[in-house]
Structures are given as structure tokens and as C-alpha cells.
Length: 101
Ligand code: FES
Image (tube, rainbow, N blue to C red; front, side, top):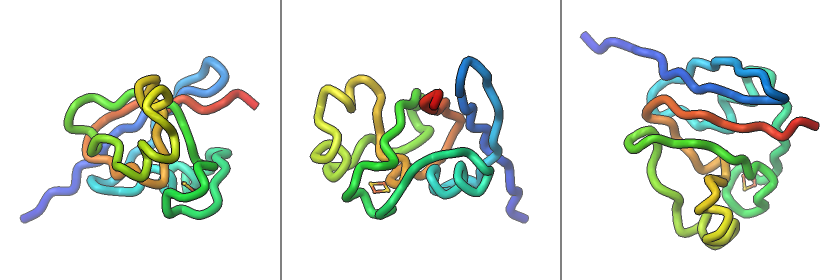
């Protein structure tokens, strides 16, 4: 029998932390939007970069940045932890930092 275990994503916003529980392999942007968090997005296909967010992703919690993300964000932003949240599929706990505004 398959057991469904939620993955805890920590969202840091304005100095406050909250937890959102995702399913294994769930899309990060869609899960956070469904949780009611104010995240701007447009294309959901990695083209517009509107969904750019800074995050801390431990090894194994999501695939490394794709070529698309590297192209849209640049290596400096990738090195600073920025990802296109619409391109992140969560496989383990991670932390997302939302802008305060
Ligand atoms: S919503 Fe356009 S790149 Fe993510």
C-alpha cells in the first residue's frame, strides 16, 4: 500500500515563517498559490521569470536549476538561490523567501 507523506515547505515572509504541506513531486508555484500566498506569475512555463523567488533547497529536495532557469535568471541569481518557482517540483523539505511587499 502506498503511503502518502506530506513534504513541509517553509515560507519566510516579512520575518514570519509558515509551513505549507506539499505532495511529493508537486509544483511549487501552484502549491503556494493554492495555499493563498501572494506570488506573482504569468506564463507558468519558465518563459517570463515573473515567478522568480529565492529559496534554499537541500540536496534531493528538488532537481537542480534547468537550462531554462539558468538562461532566464543567469548564473549569479542561480548562485544566490533564485529559481523559477513554476519550474520547481518538490521532492523534499525546502525554504522559500517571499518579498515583503
Ligand atoms: S510564471 Fe513565467 S517563468 Fe514562472
